[in-house]
Image 1 (cartoon, rainbow, N blue to C red):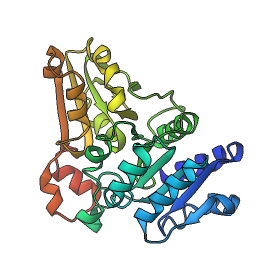
Image 2: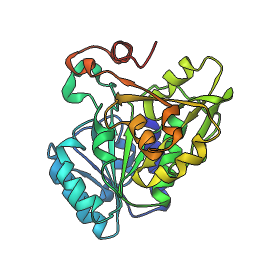
Image 3: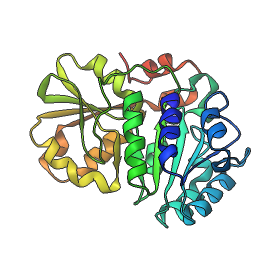
Image 4: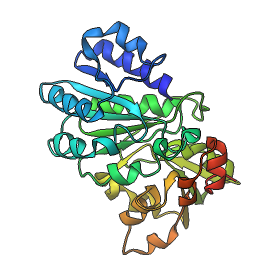
Length: 287
Protein backbone atom coordinates (compact mmCIF):
# COMPACT_ATOMS: atom_id res chain seq x y z
CA UNK A 1 0.00 0.00 0.00
CA UNK A 2 2.78 2.46 0.79
CA UNK A 3 4.15 2.13 -2.74
CA UNK A 4 0.70 2.80 -4.19
CA UNK A 5 0.43 5.77 -1.83
CA UNK A 6 3.65 7.46 -2.91
CA UNK A 7 3.02 6.74 -6.59
CA UNK A 8 -0.46 8.26 -6.43
CA UNK A 9 0.74 11.20 -4.32
CA UNK A 10 3.39 12.05 -6.92
CA UNK A 11 0.78 11.88 -9.68
CA UNK A 12 -1.58 14.16 -7.77
CA UNK A 13 1.20 16.59 -6.88
CA UNK A 14 1.95 17.05 -10.57
CA UNK A 15 -1.35 18.90 -10.97
CA UNK A 16 -1.82 20.19 -7.40
CA UNK A 17 1.08 22.44 -6.49
CA UNK A 18 -0.17 22.86 -2.92
CA UNK A 19 0.52 19.22 -1.93
CA UNK A 20 3.45 18.83 0.48
CA UNK A 21 4.99 15.85 2.28
CA UNK A 22 6.69 15.88 5.69
CA UNK A 23 8.36 12.76 7.08
CA UNK A 24 9.70 11.90 10.50
CA UNK A 25 13.15 10.74 9.35
CA UNK A 26 11.92 7.52 7.79
CA UNK A 27 10.34 6.17 4.64
CA UNK A 28 13.63 5.67 2.85
CA UNK A 29 13.35 3.63 -0.36
CA UNK A 30 9.68 4.70 -0.47
CA UNK A 31 9.40 8.49 -0.39
CA UNK A 32 12.26 9.31 -2.78
CA UNK A 33 10.03 9.67 -5.88
CA UNK A 34 8.24 12.59 -4.18
CA UNK A 35 11.33 14.07 -2.54
CA UNK A 36 13.30 14.01 -5.80
CA UNK A 37 10.46 15.37 -7.94
CA UNK A 38 9.28 18.10 -5.51
CA UNK A 39 12.21 19.02 -3.24
CA UNK A 40 10.65 22.40 -2.40
CA UNK A 41 7.54 20.64 -1.07
CA UNK A 42 9.32 17.92 0.89
CA UNK A 43 10.57 18.27 4.47
CA UNK A 44 12.32 15.76 6.72
CA UNK A 45 11.35 16.98 10.18
CA UNK A 46 13.63 14.49 11.90
CA UNK A 47 12.67 12.34 14.86
CA UNK A 48 10.37 15.07 16.17
CA UNK A 49 6.84 14.03 15.32
CA UNK A 50 5.07 16.63 17.44
CA UNK A 51 7.04 19.37 15.72
CA UNK A 52 6.26 17.69 12.38
CA UNK A 53 2.54 18.02 13.08
CA UNK A 54 2.84 21.64 14.21
CA UNK A 55 4.83 22.44 11.08
CA UNK A 56 2.15 20.72 8.96
CA UNK A 57 -0.60 22.77 10.63
CA UNK A 58 1.30 25.98 9.97
CA UNK A 59 1.86 25.14 6.31
CA UNK A 60 -1.78 24.07 5.95
CA UNK A 61 -2.93 27.42 7.35
CA UNK A 62 -1.02 29.05 4.48
CA UNK A 63 -2.71 27.01 1.77
CA UNK A 64 -0.86 23.70 1.57
CA UNK A 65 -2.43 20.25 1.83
CA UNK A 66 0.21 18.55 3.96
CA UNK A 67 0.77 14.82 4.33
CA UNK A 68 2.73 13.78 7.42
CA UNK A 69 4.27 10.32 7.23
CA UNK A 70 5.58 8.02 9.93
CA UNK A 71 5.24 4.52 11.41
CA UNK A 72 2.07 3.41 13.14
CA UNK A 73 1.71 5.10 16.53
CA UNK A 74 4.32 7.82 16.07
CA UNK A 75 2.29 10.33 14.00
CA UNK A 76 -0.89 9.61 15.99
CA UNK A 77 -0.52 8.94 19.72
CA UNK A 78 2.74 10.85 20.04
CA UNK A 79 1.11 13.85 18.33
CA UNK A 80 -2.41 13.58 19.76
CA UNK A 81 -2.50 17.07 21.26
CA UNK A 82 -1.18 18.73 18.11
CA UNK A 83 -3.62 16.83 15.91
CA UNK A 84 -6.54 17.63 18.21
CA UNK A 85 -5.82 21.32 18.81
CA UNK A 86 -3.96 22.46 15.71
CA UNK A 87 -5.37 20.30 12.92
CA UNK A 88 -8.82 18.98 13.77
CA UNK A 89 -10.10 21.97 15.73
CA UNK A 90 -9.12 24.37 12.95
CA UNK A 91 -10.29 22.02 10.17
CA UNK A 92 -6.93 22.26 8.42
CA UNK A 93 -6.03 20.16 5.35
CA UNK A 94 -3.51 17.87 7.03
CA UNK A 95 -3.52 14.15 6.27
CA UNK A 96 -1.78 12.08 8.94
CA UNK A 97 -0.34 9.04 7.20
CA UNK A 98 0.48 6.02 9.34
CA UNK A 99 2.33 3.18 7.67
CA UNK A 100 2.16 -0.21 9.36
CA UNK A 101 -1.50 -0.22 10.42
CA UNK A 102 -2.68 -3.00 12.68
CA UNK A 103 0.05 -5.55 13.30
CA UNK A 104 2.12 -4.92 10.17
CA UNK A 105 5.17 -4.34 12.38
CA UNK A 106 4.31 -7.27 14.62
CA UNK A 107 7.88 -8.38 15.24
CA UNK A 108 8.82 -4.93 16.59
CA UNK A 109 6.40 -5.25 19.49
CA UNK A 110 3.68 -3.21 21.13
CA UNK A 111 5.37 0.17 20.60
CA UNK A 112 4.86 -0.35 16.84
CA UNK A 113 1.41 -2.00 16.93
CA UNK A 114 -1.34 0.31 15.65
CA UNK A 115 -4.30 -1.39 17.33
CA UNK A 116 -5.84 1.59 19.16
CA UNK A 117 -5.43 4.26 16.49
CA UNK A 118 -9.03 4.14 15.25
CA UNK A 119 -10.20 4.82 18.81
CA UNK A 120 -8.03 7.94 19.02
CA UNK A 121 -8.63 9.37 15.57
CA UNK A 122 -12.36 8.74 15.29
CA UNK A 123 -12.96 10.69 18.50
CA UNK A 124 -12.07 13.89 16.66
CA UNK A 125 -15.23 15.40 15.14
CA UNK A 126 -13.75 16.73 11.89
CA UNK A 127 -11.45 13.81 11.12
CA UNK A 128 -12.07 11.52 8.14
CA UNK A 129 -10.51 8.08 8.53
CA UNK A 130 -9.16 6.58 5.33
CA UNK A 131 -8.44 2.89 5.84
CA UNK A 132 -7.96 1.26 2.44
CA UNK A 133 -8.08 -2.51 2.12
CA UNK A 134 -5.84 -2.87 -0.92
CA UNK A 135 -3.60 -0.75 -3.19
CA UNK A 136 -6.48 0.33 -5.42
CA UNK A 137 -8.52 1.54 -2.45
CA UNK A 138 -5.37 3.43 -1.39
CA UNK A 139 -5.37 5.32 -4.69
CA UNK A 140 -9.12 5.94 -4.44
CA UNK A 141 -8.83 7.31 -0.91
CA UNK A 142 -5.99 9.63 -1.88
CA UNK A 143 -7.95 11.05 -4.77
CA UNK A 144 -10.93 11.72 -2.52
CA UNK A 145 -8.80 13.31 0.21
CA UNK A 146 -7.10 15.68 -2.23
CA UNK A 147 -10.43 16.62 -3.79
CA UNK A 148 -11.95 17.19 -0.32
CA UNK A 149 -9.16 18.67 1.82
CA UNK A 150 -9.55 18.68 5.56
CA UNK A 151 -8.34 16.85 8.66
CA UNK A 152 -7.82 13.19 7.74
CA UNK A 153 -6.05 10.03 8.81
CA UNK A 154 -4.71 7.65 6.16
CA UNK A 155 -3.91 4.23 7.62
CA UNK A 156 -1.73 2.04 5.43
CA UNK A 157 -0.27 -1.42 5.71
CA UNK A 158 3.34 -1.88 4.57
CA UNK A 159 3.99 -3.35 1.11
CA UNK A 160 3.16 -6.39 -0.96
CA UNK A 161 -0.50 -6.59 0.07
CA UNK A 162 -2.78 -8.37 -2.44
CA UNK A 163 -5.10 -6.45 -4.73
CA UNK A 164 -8.77 -7.38 -4.32
CA UNK A 165 -10.41 -4.93 -6.73
CA UNK A 166 -10.31 -5.10 -10.52
CA UNK A 167 -10.27 -1.32 -10.84
CA UNK A 168 -10.05 1.76 -8.66
CA UNK A 169 -13.40 1.93 -6.82
CA UNK A 170 -15.57 4.96 -6.18
CA UNK A 171 -15.27 5.94 -2.53
CA UNK A 172 -16.91 8.46 -0.23
CA UNK A 173 -17.19 8.71 3.56
CA UNK A 174 -19.71 6.21 4.90
CA UNK A 175 -20.23 4.56 1.51
CA UNK A 176 -19.80 0.77 1.41
CA UNK A 177 -17.78 -0.60 -1.51
CA UNK A 178 -18.62 -4.02 -2.97
CA UNK A 179 -15.63 -6.38 -3.08
CA UNK A 180 -17.07 -9.90 -3.54
CA UNK A 181 -20.57 -10.98 -4.57
CA UNK A 182 -22.48 -13.40 -2.38
CA UNK A 183 -25.36 -13.70 0.06
CA UNK A 184 -26.53 -10.16 0.79
CA UNK A 185 -28.73 -10.64 3.83
CA UNK A 186 -25.73 -11.85 5.88
CA UNK A 187 -22.61 -9.95 4.88
CA UNK A 188 -19.00 -9.25 5.83
CA UNK A 189 -17.98 -5.59 6.20
CA UNK A 190 -14.35 -4.72 6.76
CA UNK A 191 -12.14 -1.67 6.90
CA UNK A 192 -8.42 -1.34 6.33
CA UNK A 193 -6.09 -4.30 6.42
CA UNK A 194 -8.82 -6.72 7.50
CA UNK A 195 -10.20 -7.04 3.97
CA UNK A 196 -8.26 -10.21 3.23
CA UNK A 197 -9.53 -11.81 6.44
CA UNK A 198 -13.09 -10.90 5.48
CA UNK A 199 -12.71 -12.63 2.11
CA UNK A 200 -11.24 -15.72 3.77
CA UNK A 201 -14.12 -15.91 6.25
CA UNK A 202 -16.91 -15.10 3.78
CA UNK A 203 -18.14 -18.67 3.05
CA UNK A 204 -20.50 -17.49 0.34
CA UNK A 205 -21.42 -14.22 1.96
CA UNK A 206 -21.01 -10.91 0.16
CA UNK A 207 -17.94 -8.92 1.20
CA UNK A 208 -18.02 -5.15 1.44
CA UNK A 209 -15.36 -2.62 2.41
CA UNK A 210 -15.70 0.77 4.07
CA UNK A 211 -12.44 2.64 3.38
CA UNK A 212 -13.66 6.13 4.36
CA UNK A 213 -15.49 6.78 7.61
CA UNK A 214 -15.55 8.93 10.73
CA UNK A 215 -17.89 10.68 13.15
CA UNK A 216 -19.80 12.52 10.43
CA UNK A 217 -20.30 9.36 8.35
CA UNK A 218 -22.53 7.60 10.88
CA UNK A 219 -25.68 9.05 9.34
CA UNK A 220 -25.37 6.89 6.20
CA UNK A 221 -25.13 3.59 8.06
CA UNK A 222 -28.75 2.79 9.07
CA UNK A 223 -29.98 2.67 5.46
CA UNK A 224 -27.14 0.38 4.40
CA UNK A 225 -27.66 -1.98 7.33
CA UNK A 226 -31.47 -2.07 6.95
CA UNK A 227 -31.69 -4.73 4.16
CA UNK A 228 -29.37 -7.11 6.05
CA UNK A 229 -30.20 -9.51 8.84
CA UNK A 230 -26.55 -9.72 9.91
CA UNK A 231 -23.43 -7.60 9.38
CA UNK A 232 -20.14 -9.09 10.56
CA UNK A 233 -17.45 -6.42 10.86
CA UNK A 234 -13.74 -7.19 10.72
CA UNK A 235 -10.84 -4.96 11.78
CA UNK A 236 -7.16 -5.31 12.72
CA UNK A 237 -7.75 -3.17 15.81
CA UNK A 238 -8.94 -3.84 19.35
CA UNK A 239 -12.70 -4.10 19.74
CA UNK A 240 -12.98 -1.19 22.17
CA UNK A 241 -13.26 2.07 20.27
CA UNK A 242 -12.83 0.34 16.92
CA UNK A 243 -14.74 0.01 13.67
CA UNK A 244 -17.38 -2.42 14.95
CA UNK A 245 -18.03 -0.13 17.90
CA UNK A 246 -18.37 2.82 15.53
CA UNK A 247 -20.93 1.00 13.38
CA UNK A 248 -22.89 -0.11 16.45
CA UNK A 249 -22.96 3.47 17.71
CA UNK A 250 -24.35 4.57 14.34
CA UNK A 251 -27.51 2.52 14.94
CA UNK A 252 -27.60 2.59 18.75
CA UNK A 253 -31.09 2.38 20.17
CA UNK A 254 -32.53 0.65 17.10
CA UNK A 255 -33.15 -2.99 16.29
CA UNK A 256 -30.30 -2.86 13.76
CA UNK A 257 -27.72 -2.68 16.57
CA UNK A 258 -28.35 -6.34 17.37
CA UNK A 259 -27.49 -7.33 13.78
CA UNK A 260 -23.86 -6.20 14.05
CA UNK A 261 -21.33 -8.89 14.97
CA UNK A 262 -17.86 -7.42 15.44
CA UNK A 263 -14.69 -9.44 14.93
CA UNK A 264 -11.64 -7.59 16.21
CA UNK A 265 -8.27 -8.33 17.75
CA UNK A 266 -8.07 -9.66 21.27
CA UNK A 267 -6.12 -7.54 23.75
CA UNK A 268 -4.00 -10.66 24.29
CA UNK A 269 -1.82 -9.62 21.36
CA UNK A 270 -0.68 -6.46 23.17
CA UNK A 271 1.73 -8.58 25.25
CA UNK A 272 3.10 -10.60 22.34
CA UNK A 273 5.89 -10.19 19.81
CA UNK A 274 5.55 -12.22 16.61
CA UNK A 275 4.96 -11.88 12.91
CA UNK A 276 1.80 -10.22 11.61
CA UNK A 277 0.18 -13.46 10.43
CA UNK A 278 0.76 -15.14 13.78
CA UNK A 279 -0.56 -12.21 15.78
CA UNK A 280 -3.65 -11.87 13.58
CA UNK A 281 -4.37 -15.55 14.15
CA UNK A 282 -3.74 -15.45 17.91
CA UNK A 283 -5.79 -12.27 18.13
CA UNK A 284 -8.79 -13.93 16.48
CA UNK A 285 -8.90 -11.94 13.26
CA UNK A 286 -7.93 -14.78 10.93
CA UNK A 287 -8.90 -18.42 11.08
